[in-house]
Structure formats: C-alpha cells, structure tokens
Length: 219
Length: 221
Image (cartoon, rainbow over all chains, first blue to last red; front, side, top):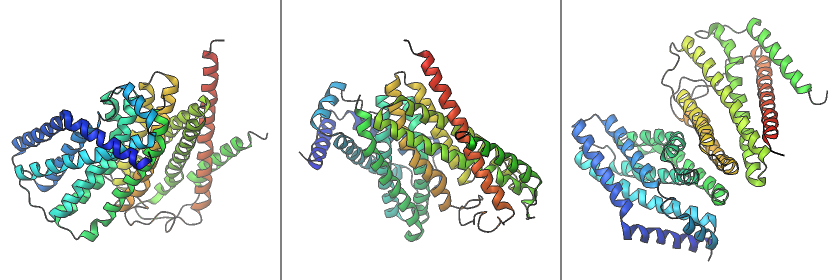
C-alpha cells in the first residue's frame, strides 16, 4: 500500500471506531453544549468582544479534551502492530486528518449552539464561519503533535496543557483578530494577512509533525 | 592560544562596549534622550538568545540523527543559557519601557509574544523534568524543541509585525537601524552583539563541559 491508501485506511478505521463507541464525540458535545449554557446563564448578555473571546476559550478547551486522547485510547500493543504494517508518516497524517474532521464537526455544532443561545449580530457571518473552520483545523494540527509527545511522556494531562498552550497562543491571537474582523463586517481584503499567517502556521506544524513523528514513536 | 582567542575577544569587546557605551557620544533624540544607550545592551541580549536557541535546535536535530548523549546535553545547556539571556532581555526592556513608554509592561504584541516564547522554553525544561528515563527524555524533548523553534520565530518576528506595536521595527514603525542609528552608534552596537553572542557561547560551553564531567563522575565503572 502506498502512503495515501494507508492514510485513507487509518482514517476510516478511526471513524469506524468512533462511530461504534460514540464515546468521545458524545462526551465532547455534551461538554460544549453545557459550557455554552453555563456561560449563557452566567453572562445573560455580553458585549461583542467578550462574546468572541468566550467562544474561542470554549473551543480551546473542547479541542484540548477532544484531541488529548488521540494517541492513548489504543493500547501500546495495537500501536506496535500499526507501526509494523504502515509507515509512521501515515499514522500521524491519518491522526491529523481524523482530528481535523472531528474538530470541524465539533466547531460547527458549537458555533450553531453558541450563536442560537447567545444572540449576537455578525457583520460577515460567512467569514466568521470560515474563521471557525480554519481555527478548528489549526487546533487539530497543533494539538495532534503535542498529544503525541505527551502520550510518550506518560500521558499526563498537565504536561499536555503546559506543552500546548504556549504553542497555541499565537494561533488564538490571530484567530481572535480574524473573527473580530468578521464580526465588525470589515472588508475581506483586510483579513487576508491573518488568513495567510494561519495557513502558514498550519503548513509549518504539519511539515514539522511529519518530519518529527517517525523519531517519536520509535521506542 | 588557538582556542582561547575568541574568549579574549569577547571580554575585550564587552569591556569596550561598556566603557564606550556609557561614556561615548550619542545622538540627542526626543523621548529617548540618554536611554538610547540601552540599545547596546537590550538588543544584543535577544541576538544572543536567538543564537543559543539556534544552537539548541541544531544539536537536537543532530541528536535525533545520531542518538549521542553529548548532543542532547549541548541542546539543553544551550536552552538553559538562552533562557538567562531572555530574562536579561526582558529586564533591560522593562527598564527602557518604564522610561520611554511610562510603563514597564505596556500591553504590546512584541512584549506579550516574547513572554509567551519564554513560557515555551520553560515548558521545554518542565518536559525534561517530567521524564525519568534518559534516552526517552532526550528524544522527546528534542522533538519538542524542534517543534517549538519555528513557532518561536513566528511569535517574535512575524506576528508583532502584523499589528500595531510601540516597539521599533514592528507594526509599520521603522527600525532603529534605518533612521535613528547613526554612525556613532553602529560600531559599538555591532561590537556589543558579537561580544554578547560570544559570551553566551562561552557560558554555554562551560556548562556543557561541566555536565559532561558530572555524567562521567556518575558513571559506574
């Protein structure tokens, strides 16, 4: 099998595993919906800046808990089996793609729940939606590699937080700025810089993950 | 003599920089006034830090390729020394900001991202403490180090340029180099950069050699 086929098979495997147990997806969905509801009860109405910041904070913690488990849910023996039949690059690429799909789905649900419960006028809803999708994809690429590192380090979740937050803060700063632009309904040309930076960060993290993961899994 | 010439050079350069930097003539500029002398000390700290982090990444890559323990020791000692320079850079910057901007920590993108990148390297040191097994620690921290380096570059040198910033060289401000730095400042500034980079590498190499000796001492024959 070549790399693409391997990746396809692994992504399908992850999707089927998730679909059969629905363990992670239900837990995370419940988490997102209940956090949104708690925030709504606590704040009632907020000004646009807080609305935007709150949404990204909810997304950040949802994505940490969604991706945290991506390497530890399968047993060490089974991972050894994967590594003996497919290449390490395929494993990390498949995980990144699967986490992207998971995060985009999650982010869309979170966005619709959040914006229906918390009414807030958006200047450019389409660009905001794009920012949400781009943001969830970026979270997926960064957190996948970091969860790989922390799973090798005895998988404690404190370590995951310590390692990932400094890495993810630049992403968050750019995302908050981009989504604020979308909220204010600024001209789309203004946001091109931010979109470029986000895409560049994604490309860098995916390339670095692809280069480094083969060293990481070999014990 | 062949090996110590650069150490002598570093000491001579820095002694010269301290004397000429504090006593020498500087251009009179509004707001900055005499604090412009800080350019000899604040900016070279970051150059030295960047140089040390670069050494660290290079040795992490070398470690992953060969698996030699010495390379890992070099990588971690470079980060240890780099973090010291980073803190000195923050301290001199805060002193300077207090006088020119009226606040030691104005909410400025350049400052915030330098704080975040400091956190990233402290996280690297925490990661090393969290792992017991030596080989595993070396490998995983090397991977994290290489992963963090490009993000540090984005944080320090790309993001602040995109937004409004008080800091020179960012947010459409011109750098010191292009307008304010005249030919009085330039030679001392370059001497200072070279001097601090050399001092940084000297400290780093001393720590590296000390660690190697410690490792040798701990070995059971």
